[in-house]
Length: 262
Ligand SMILES: Nc1ncnc2c1ncn2[C@@H]1O[C@H](COP(=O)(O)OP(=O)(O)OP(=O)(O)O)[C@@H](O)[C@H]1O
Image (cartoon, rainbow, N blue to C red; front, side, top):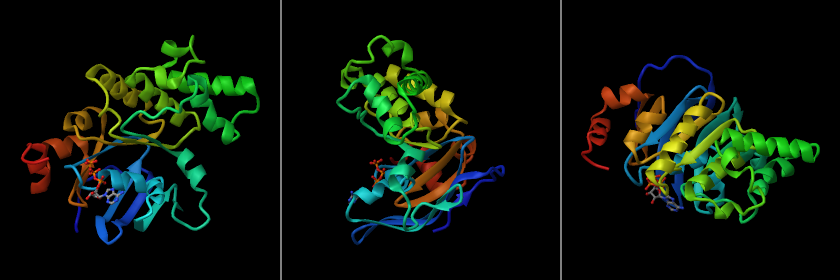
């Protein structure tokens, strides 16, 4: 399967995927996807339901390892290092490549503990003051500090859905990731909470490579600078978001963005 690549300015790839295929048992869900993802941009994965966006996203931090039937072929490098090599520390990998899920999933613990847990187990704080500073910085960066600073001991699950999602983003940020993967992070949120997350993605852009799976083409157009269009397990087209939405080269992309299916 040939993918159409628009001209992209040369940037150092944070993640390079080459010929990545994924199988669930005998069923192939993804067919030879190759892509370079840069820290400079927010990259959106779009495409109709079941096309493999989430499957591909999960290959980028080996989340598919948790699905017994899943098998990954091909190569994925993070800063040049093969993340599927034997001996790769997957816990460390998932700190470097953090993930935010569709449904906010804070731990049933305090707001403080939700953010402090990762830095503590990864040994990022020497003492309580360090940990406090990491918690505050992460919550500030996730745009949540002002709303929770007086109630850090309250349960994370008592927050609104939008706040919970920002808490999950703070939790990912707290371990100093290089990449943040977001799998439809706004699909469970109302429009105001969605706008806040989109704004936050804009604020985090450039500091982390951000990859977002979204069903909303409007959202992809608003938050991303690079877009990959997936269809039936293949990546059909990849390029600047403006090119994909205004000047797609492939009929299938054109059909999707004009709403013919999906
Ligand atoms: N755990 C699994 N076991 C078996 N098949 C799976 C599993 N997860 C996904 N699939 C299959 O792989 C294909 C791609 O699914 P995937 O969830 O990656 O698509 P998607 O584009 O993210 O869809 P959606 O937008 O609906 O979330 C689908 O045919 C799906 O049924």
